[in-house]
Length: 293
Image 1 (cartoon, helix red, strand yellow):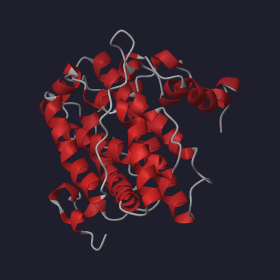
Image 2: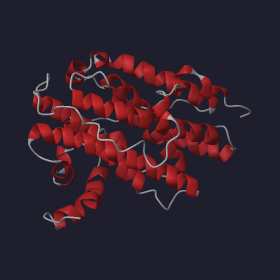
Image 3: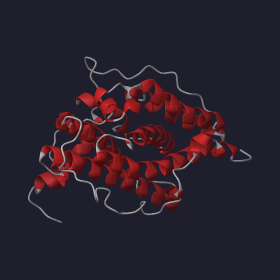
Image 4: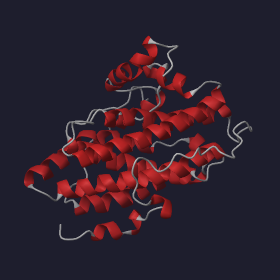
């Protein structure tokens, strides 16, 4: 690579001054300040809670996967970057589970630590363990690009609580996407070995990408912009395609991962990886259910 012209495309536009380079998160202001969460939502409360759980579980499980890389990354700078991305996602998970808890009469800890595997509603993409750093940044690129476009649409949600969470999360995800894209280009357009490993990393998780774009009538009700999954996918591809082209990488041609009877992660059907994640993540809380720390 001789220049960073690909970074000037409109697809890389940030969300204004608030999206300047971050460190240690993007601020700690409570997004629910001045929002009456006790007001009856326009969408059925149970359906709204289910969608908050879906988005919260995506962030919670993926945050845990990224945390597992701390002390294993190639440089201290990458340790800090990935740790802070994981913290951002954990913060998004807490807000989304809190909003779900408001609607279900429970709290974020109960939802995070005391649900069983089949009660989680995350997409399967976030469950698998990355085999190397190339796979990590490739998956982060796809996840953050998709989630950013999703939250941008949900900033106009009919539920003010979800809209506030989306506003904050979109700012964070703009950085996550930029960080991942930079590494995908560096590795893809680097040495023969780094190119091979970057291409292999994409092919490893790509079967789970289609699951991100399944139609959801409740999300469409919350934001009419989500009524057409093809439009969401088109906007995601508009970012991924130039990054892959600049990185001299090929979009993998692989069959989508099959579900069970047509059911996938959103339906509580997961890979065996999720059980191991939850065993690790929930062990202390389940061993000391009344513990306070």
